[in-house]
Length: 260
Image (cartoon, rainbow, N blue to C red):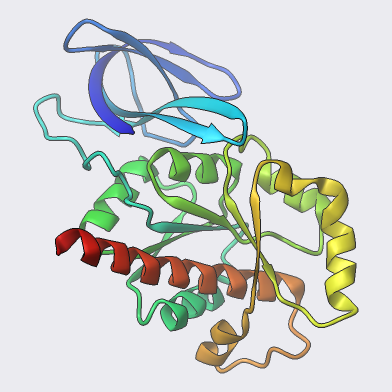
């Protein structure tokens, strides 16, 4: 269940992840973390925040995240489904965004895609706006574990396009992401498949996250690029896009069932 609310900022606590103390209209005091930039906020400003509860394996995670300044009399930025399971592909940089987009377009039958920079102010609110406007797939360039976490809190399906050739970079990208996200791994021929498994195995990523083996070929075909000789990063981005497109197709089906 996703709940949106607004409140007046009463205190701001600095730290690795800043926290706002927010007082709602009914007098409740909530503590909302600020994992992503939301612009200049000071005491007495009104902000919007989202609260949700997630089951992650055997753990229960409660998240309350500040999204940005918001008029106190404005309607909520989204309904109780938030991003409504829209895929949010988080890429470590912008190098392979086009390839990931191609995968989403091919697998999602021309899904509407939008790329956003990781440092955009009030990014969570922009993501909600985009889905409301009809965007099917969101691509966050230069993202991190914080972006994956916020996407999950907002009801999206976060997908991490991992820097697969560098275990340290993978760990860095996922740092702080204590909620489950999708980790697409490109389907490879042997012996490359075994080598990649040997790289990822010791990291125990599946203890929290869901690894999904995905054929990246549709992304390369759509981009008219050769798959042979492609880097792991390129194939990982393509696989992320293809997975995102498949999720869009699934979302269309269940939404059509709801409408009947």
